[in-house]
Amino acid sequence: MSGALRFNVMHFMPYAHLPENHKEFKSTWVSFPNKYYDPEKGHELYQRYFEQLVLADKLGFDAIVLNEHHNTVYSMMATPNVVAAALVPQVKRAKICVWGVPPNFMLPNRLAEEYAILDVLSKGRLEIAFPLGTGMEYWSNPVNPVTSRERFRESLKIMLQAWKEDGPTTYYGKFYTYRFLNPWPRPYQKPHPPCYIVGTGSPETIELAAELGFGYSSVFVPKQKALELNEKLRERSAHYGHTLRPDQLPLLNFIYVAETQEEAEKEYPVHLQRFFEDYARSTPQWLAPPGYISVEQLKIRSAGADKMHGAFDFKAISGAFFISVGTPEKVANEMGEWAEKMKTNHLNSVMHVADMPHWKTVKNLTLFAEEVIPRLRKGENR
Amino acid sequence: MSKLVREEYTIDGVKTVLYTAGKGDPLVFFHGAGTVDGFDFAEAWTDKFRVIAAYHPGWGESGDDTTFTEIHDYVMHYLELFDALKLDTFNLVGLSLGGYLAAKFASEHGHRVKKLALIAPFGMHDPEHPTLDIISTPGEQVVPMLASNFEVLKNRLPANIDVEFLAARYRESTTVARLLWEHPIDSRLPRYLHRLQMPTLVVWGDEDKIIPVHQAQLWREHIPNAEVMIVKGAGHLVHLEKPEVAPAIGKFLL
Image: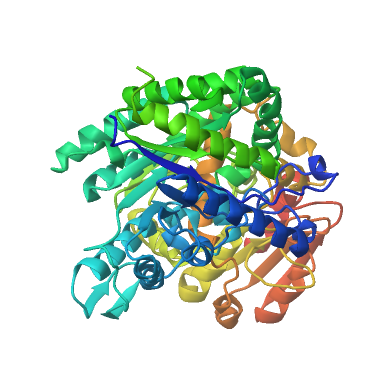
């Protein structure tokens, strides 16, 4: 694995100033009143988060990762391509990953154009992931969740046609008609930037990634399920004649590094708790708008949801998901084990969560870059 | 009064379950956006009519047709079901979303509908008295709003809300979303209501919390021969709350 390992830092850019009464709201998504958004504070946060990502670039991270969410404190990146465009001149070396814009909320040609602009601007440093969009996004955008998967497939088909075939071409589909599909500019990378699909592991999405030869990153699924999904993708990719490479399986993880174990366990859990309990707080209805998942999936999720209730348990949650908190040595060891087990060399780490203060994020990034990455690269964990 | 009997058909590939009983002129009932209220109230009509109450595709015991994305697909489905049943002309009663379907059907195939009764029909847009958005209102909030006297509905709900019950509701919500998520307001509906030339009765509970009773006035204005019956002290499921409603509709249809 040495040498080939790749380290991303993923940022959600949360709006980190929840009002005191926020617990009165069942969800901080969809309907959480936007009167609580203060643009002055928003401005400061963007400055701070940009600084963190620019620092990550200087520290030697291989890529920075952005994504899209709507109507929520969880993320201030309703349009991540705008954020990416602002970052391109500041992030000089690292790849810029927009993972990504749900194509269902854009006209496919416009999304193909925006990504091409970013790729040309950054001289081929763009990577793309296609999410279906969480259930919450469908409450916030005027697209029928019942049609989400079908529309998703069609959007991807149009974008790939736009990138791979010389235009003008035509496209006559169920949702879109293009008499002149001929977007300018075209991507810097040929035929297009590396593509992934991100999701929570629904069989339809895995199948699509396999069919298109894309990478796949499962997010917010427990370790054992993530492993099964990777294996499933490998098997289905082979079925379509694609050999899945380790770098096509980005592994989402949450990391906090400190000088000592005690320090790490003192400084981090409160923010992770707020991340899960406050910033990611949603309702079953928001998570699964009608038709967003099948009735069978709903039954599985409803049965599973009962187990998720109860107080935040740092130990339990750290055991269930890819979360590593501690000294550089411990984190390097754990990440090395994950990479090996998951047959990936692509580690995608969230280094800032919820209302974590700037100094903690900076320390986390710095220690990770200076103490964890070299250990893993040298294979010191073995 | 006779007990309704289950019959099963395959209509254009879709399993279609209906409940039927009685002799006389046919009376077709279109149910609303949920099916927990059941069909048994319709037994009141079986003395004078041959009652036919089917589950629409995507609801209750009938199968799904995921290609149904607009109300007109349901009109087409019923045309085919009526062919299978060899029904030519009939009386038509529609409740809530089924009232919308009944009005659409009757505006397109008026010569087949002898008389029409609409119970708290969905479909009018009244910005002053808007219909509750059942898509975004959580189910646990919608259910208590269905009736003024919730007792009439309570015994039709399971004692413990289990996964199976939630899944059945999710499936019906999905069917509703397929129809109404993007366009909950059908601006063409009032445009063609003047074609309802048959005698029409509009029934409404004056305490309806789902579709406000004020909307009855809009229906009266758009339908040439509409009679309006306002029932005091009743909510959206007026036919369950007030036992006199079904016989009154039956009397009108005779």
